[in-house]
Length: 605
Image 1 (cartoon, rainbow, N blue to C red):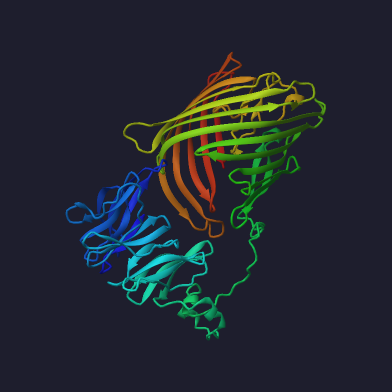
Image 2: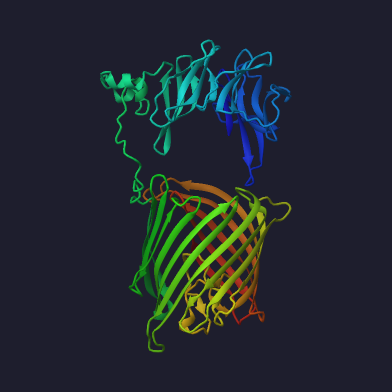
């Protein structure tokens, strides 16, 4: 949305709405909105540019027309839809949202060698420079026939200023603690604006009067405080109050770092089929946070169940101080029935244009506990990994990716692996294509995926094909069943695995795999939620229901086929501010390996 502008009587709001796709292309249109009911009265299609302002007589709308890298002012006649060029800039030119006066003059921001400055388009078509400095002069609005209010940088902060066209000197009228945005006149004596308030904004007003210098404010006696109802906290500086500066110390990266933004305890119980369906109780706590500016982030997950009575803990830390590289460290202690995994991963990544490249150092150690049928065993692994991926696509918010192609390549070398095995490598390539779905439907798509993976010189059967997909937090079925015959000392965890849909409960053993999968998805939009779930828990939002049909095929070690088809139903929700939670049911029909039908119910993060 841009160019929000009321008619002089306040009855209609005009604006430009741009529908933008993932590539940055957009389709713009002018809206005329009833300012009292919110009803869209009329639209004008096919605009190429950004918004400006409606003329005071309500007969036209002045906007920024963009063609290539050249911007010019155009006038849209609302009655006929005719468009008239007002300026004829050539070459590279950038203009900001204009404001039209009653006599036909137009003031607008223009990018110059010094930065954004203001210019005035006279009624005879000439352009006159109003400011020519490096103080970011932007967002002008007419106060009356001779004065303009706009935002301008002062001591590193955007403040509201007034410019008298006769004197030509900007006069500052606000002293906001952080910044002022979207300043607009409220009559001839006051302005309203957005005032930054921590992570939010407040809507404040201030008189059109010069602000005293900071030295004068510091020496002047403090006036008696006014009643709380007379002024908001954010507007107090504009009534003559001095600011209460808490500290002038440098920024601390620990500010709010230890205050988790995500606090999610959970508890559930499932029957144990191996113990007469007696309940197994599961519980855990997830915490995640960052400092105020997001330089450092962390996440902690601790969980345990009543059967194992030994907790699993994972911790991740990431920092942006290595920019343009993003570096993270993850350590985990994962306990399962009969074994314990210790994992560590140091990774760094960055994007070259839109292509992400990442490097990773992986370390794994798995300890198998001794039982009546097997001795204790230990296996370990250490080596560097690298990957690069590319994706280009076109998507919509409700329809998902409609057209797209993706490629990714990954490789790893493990000189330190196992006790009596040779160093080996891991090579992986993946190609993905997105296609529009059925011709008459708008919120569906078809995804095709092909994967080739090969572990040269690796122990036979090291690669696991099938099993629970990463990110699936719970399924109401114990699994996956490990059908592999690989010795315990050569099983380093789940690093060497490929997800095969329909085989979530069954793990295949291989050294190489060719895999192809197809998925058709249709979305039913709901968009409904609650600010507080059950009046106690955080907000809960239901975004959509997804219907899926899929087919998967894998060929392991170039000799065995594994095929499945099925369907799934997903309920996509968001818990809290940014925790996606999906409830699902999936059915799969398998044609190989002597497996029957598979039913899965659960949720995924």
